[in-house]
Image 1 (cartoon, protein in one colour):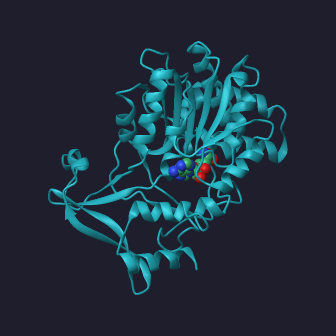
Image 2: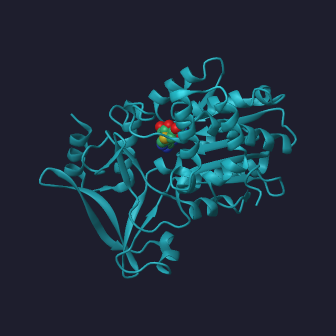
Image 3: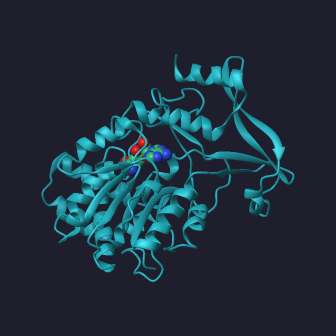
Length: 354
Ligand code: SAH
């Protein structure tokens, strides 16, 4: 039975499915989920992420985290955490770039929060020679200072969508009509969590909510506040979500989110305001900064020039294109944003001080 048939059978038996349940089934179904069945990243996959574009991304993040570790007194043991590590490329680049930072590797307990067994296996292969530990939930973080990175993790978490109807909201659901999956709207209900959105929306507007994002980030921020540490979050999105940002991508092209469950990546824009609200009471957040600006401040151009000296021909062209892709405002430079989290009173991560 295909995942599509499984979902149709479930909806037929139990009624319309909430969008977040649909998304998590599509992405993480144990045998037919998108992340559980395929390596989705890289040139052969459906999409390419910053660490897969160039090693420079992870190198600069590694050095930024190591600087923050030094700034906070170089704690003798800490969790070096990545949320949603994909193929393990970013954490591997972080480790390579920080090899020369005295004591950093000895102090680091590499900790990976990853839901997909197939990707865990790939991460283990990428990190051969290291001894990472995997966790299922953020609550399982060891009781240690934590220096963390999340790249394109929050956009992969399931969202709910609500359409405004007077002072109430109708939730978008997945139903079945004539044997196919279709979107529909549930009954109008009041949503206390969306009370503030009555001020900036009008009838018919759609807003999104990512129920699992804030608890993950507030747990991480609390750990940073109580034990020391820092986090760097990269993703695409805006300060406050408005409108339908659910996107399905297959073979580097957008597709309908309902046509091929489990075969396409499903993501949504990240609502940075919600992430901020979850972290700021507990720890200090930097401004939201465009990825391109952050990487330039950390010296990506100098690093790109140094790497270019050993390249020629096609490899040099690819390298120049990768630098541009990561930083240029019309490529990933502006669409992707970053912000840092440190304990109240600690120095902000390099590149995010202002
Ligand atoms: N950071 C990587 C991969 C981004 S894709 C990169 O930049 O290339 C999203 C990653 O998050 C995948 O590894 C996916 O399996 C993982 N993921 C998605 N939902 C998750 C969840 N609820 N808990 C843990 N990992 C999750």
